[in-house]
Amino acid sequence: DQQVKQNSPSLSVQEGRISILNCDYTNSMFDYFLWYKKYPAEGPTFLISISSIKDKNEDGRFTVFLNKSAKHLSLHIVPSQPGDSAVYFCAAYYGGSQGNLIFGKGTKLSVKP
Amino acid sequence: SQTIHQWPATLVQPVGSPLSLECTVEGTSNPNLYWYRQAAGRGLQLLFYSVGIGQISSEVPQNLSASRPQDRQFILSSKKLLLSDSGFYLCAWSGGLAGPDTQYFGPGTRLTVL
Image 1: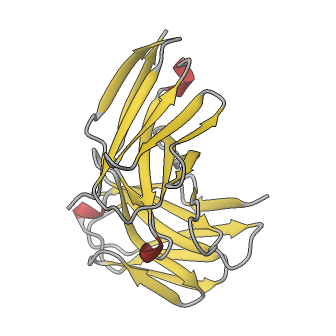
Image 2: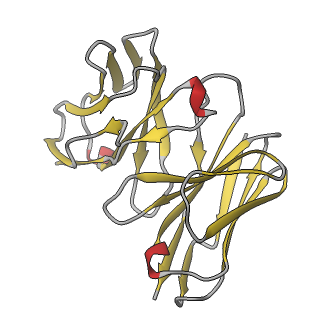
């Protein structure tokens, strides 16, 4: 049973426009969410996180929105740049998981010049 | 600052051969350590995690094992590799804090079993 779902395996966006990556979760116990960016043949890089007590967190071009009632979060990248082209993983955590993160399967973002 | 190392970067092994992948972390003490696998077209699967020396928890049954002989060293092993063991293996660490704990990943090892 997949607790964290990224239903879009890929997304293509024009440079300068907004990229919106979506993530849904099923476990209402999750209280912390993270986004990672991964280039081929490299380890994932931590991007941004959000606690369940917030509904928005912003860091430069990256903003994460959390809708707890819908069990949905999204990552907005504005403006998108070709260097943003990578696979983005959503991950969730709850205290009972002993520090373990539950990852989605990822969304491949392609930003075209 | 903290850094995490993995080696080798790539590895090609025949079916039935043994495996040893090493991960070390610098710049932190008592980290939580994790082994993940990313198979082709799939997400990140947690294999093992460790909260201290000699303490290993397995998340999925398989022919792999993990050991933590030192505080900042985490080793992934197998006695006999299977074709299905091919994938990208990632080691990660976190601060071991109570509560939400961001994980930081190493560069990964690409394993191909032929």
